[in-house]
Each structure stands twice: as structure tokens, then as C-alpha cells.
Amino acid sequence: MTWGDGNQFLGGSCEANSEYGTNISSNCRFNTFIGMGNENLNASTGDFVDRGRYSKFLNCYSSQRFVAQGFNGLIDGGYFELIEVQSVAIGYEVKNAAVNNWNTGAGGFTDAGSGTRKRSIYDIDASIFINTTDVRTAATMSLTSVTGGTRGTWLNDTRLPCTVYIQGTASITQATVSRGADAVNIPTSPVQAVRLEAGDTLTLTWSSSGPGPSVSRRTHTEG
Image 1 (cartoon, rainbow, N blue to C red):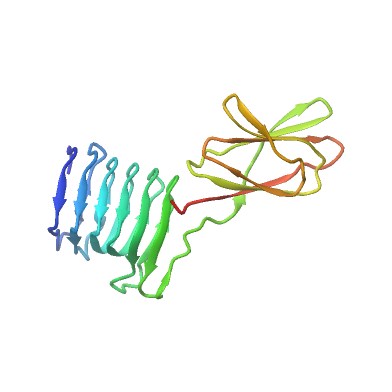
Image 2 (image 1 turned 180 degrees about the vertical axis):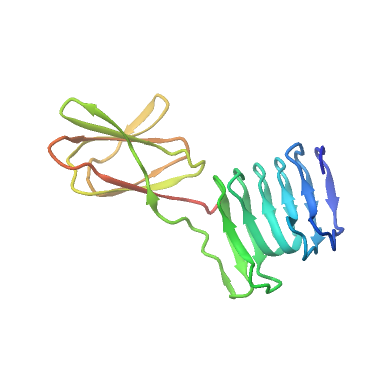
């Protein structure tokens, strides 16, 4: 599909293609696929390739690879061999789906996208639900020298809520969470966890007489 807006496809299948099954370009918006099943085991690109905006796939299936590269797409239900959310994808949501249905040894679920929401994804081979919670990663603060100390800020630009962990022995003199002109003070404990919504900024000020805090975050990807 090269140019297509607001279309709905009910059922049907693309099979035995050598490059891809269903290819949705970046010019396509608000298209919905319901109960569509693709079987293209030799497709070099994938059964489904979604580069569109606001595409929805409801109870579809794919015997090879579903490639998500679009903006705010949705996979809800269905069964697949591999769902691959690539790095160019923004705001994709994957839920209530099963993977590894064809037992090729190369199935599963991978996510390199930005702001991906994901939950209730079942691995048929392993007979378990995949742990889709995010791992804790470092949050690098922007540092500024202030009178008597240092101020560090971190903007939650993950597009999702985060739990931010503050650790160490720093002598924190002020701590705030802000969004625009609205700011609220939080405890100055050197060891604590605080929730930041998307777009919130954490600001910590600490005395120059000691080390700065260690800050890390875990994104809430459950959707």
C-alpha cells in the first residue's frame, strides 16, 4: 500500500511471496487489518512491514516476521512467529498476542523502538508470557555549577512514565520534579525512588563537598 488512509481490510491472506506479504508505506494512515493471515516463509523482508501511521492489526497472524517501523501502530491479539519492533518505530503498542507459533527457531519478540508499550505477549514455544518490563538503565544528568554545589537535571523524554532511582551518599540540598513552570519539591534523601511522567524533569542540587548521586531509570512499558 503506497497511499492509503482510513481503509479497513477484513480477513484475507497474502501467501508465497518472495519479498514481503503486506507492505504499508509511510504515506499511509489510519488503516485497520482484522483477521488477516499472511504466510510468506521465504519473504526476505517480512509477512507484514508497517511503516504507516496509526495502523491497527487486530487478531491477525503471520508465519514469518512482522516488521514494525511505523508511528503509533497497534498489534492487538493474533499469533505470529516473530514480532520485530525496529529502532525507527515510535509509540508502537503490542498486546494480547502470541509468538513462536511456527517453531522456526528464529521467532519471538524484539523491541528496539521508542516509547513502545507492550504487555501480555505469550511465547508458545516456551509456554510462558514474555517479561516485557523494561530493565533499569543509567539516566545521565545535565550538570550546572551553582553557588556552593552542583545542579543536575534529567528530562524524561522516553514518551512513557518512568521510575527514577537515586542512589549514593550525596548531600542533596534541593530536589524537584517539574513540567514547564509547575514544580513540586520531593524529599532530599540520597537514596529514593520517584515516578516521573513523560515530559517531567528531575532536578537535584547537591553540595560540592561530596560526590554526586547516581541516577538510573526503569520505563513503564506495560501500556
